[in-house]
Image 1 (tube, one colour):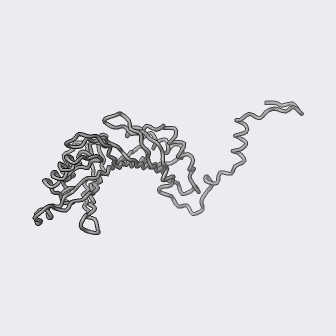
Image 2 (cartoon, one colour; image 1 turned 30 degrees about the vertical axis):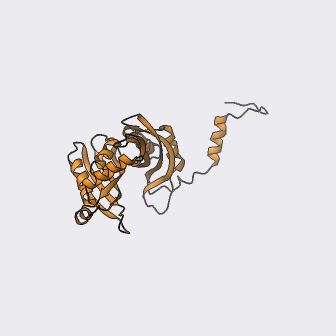
Length: 278
């Protein structure tokens, strides 16, 4: 483009942006003299509104706490943190197992990395009906996605934490009246050949405990839940074994880790058990 001497031309936005970029030194892309590869670098603790697919309503609105990471070759001083957010924004708010792979591959491409990681934890909600009155209440659970891409290989782990009630078999056996019981958390992490619904993991755990929990109970419901727990005493060891038996029978589960922690009502400590297989 030829400009006559003394003639002024307006600078286009594209030219202005190009000049601004040229004037800014890219420190991150500079060479690092220590030459040590970093396994994971990125952003963590990012709160982001998302939509999760569920069995009942197609999608459910929630807020996730997200971490996005890549590896960093030894020759580079730093990564480009803003690009992680750009990748996440570009993929919209609907998150499901299928598009997590797209997010990982986009991070690899945009950040010139071979390895990409995504971690995403969020509250997941279910409407449950009390066992006798049938009154509806909303229960919250904690779900987590952990996904890693190494080249074209994708590893995905679904983790779900389900609150339950457990009643002590020993306390029931030795006590003339009643038995101590408490809330506990059962956390199930799985790898599978096909996607598993979060609701299915929750149902599997709740059916393995002394009783499931509800957010709304009337007196007749409370009576039913208390009696159900008393009729189904479960140690923390029983809980993880009950869940493991069902996961062993699942045709798509290739690996699992089951952890149970009871918030003891008669001790100042918790009871814990874990089984891992695969």
